[in-house]
Image 1: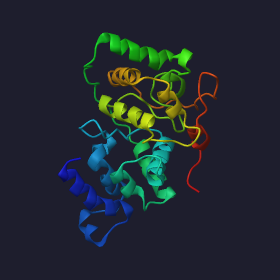
Image 2: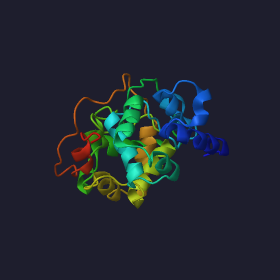
Image 3: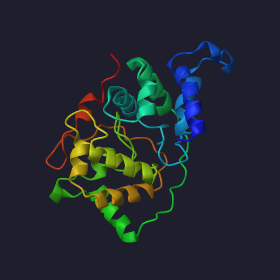
Image 4: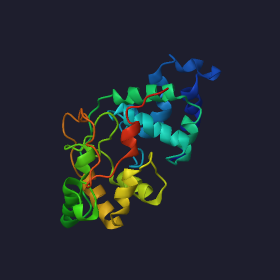
Length: 242
């Protein structure tokens, strides 16, 4: 994060948590104004940051965004700036933020040109679309939708994300820096794949254009089977603020 973004983040963090006295000059106290603390890194309208590490928020399932905000606040995901930003916020306020970004329908940019070989892309596609049954690895499409645009209520799409971000998140799952509610199915899946496999999947996903429309599928992920580990996230997916 640049020094400019750090300064802007610090200035806006208090505004997200509650309108401070000095903010009177910023105009109306709306949620759109408050989430500028988010878009300072995640890009205008939550379209994604320009550096490849701050993912898109716009159009993702509200249930997914809500539970990721909870994960940052409650220690299942680790990134200091995010954790500090959401630490004072209530469940209901986090859901308001999640719904705000979920309702934003803005176009995706074209994918970046792949920087890996065709054989690597083919390997990544095979895992993403067919899985590795002999290793107990389901296809990405099994949980994230046939079009890989996600599934309601809380499974995110995998397209339209930078390769660096995908690599970082898969690595975080593998190292335990990113966790979900037990049983943590993503952790189980990435542990069954080699780093080269994960890199190939990330490269192929990042190279795919996002279909139009890009809305998540209006159905829940399938139940756990021998080919798909049970996911604790499925159990909490429909749980909203108390």
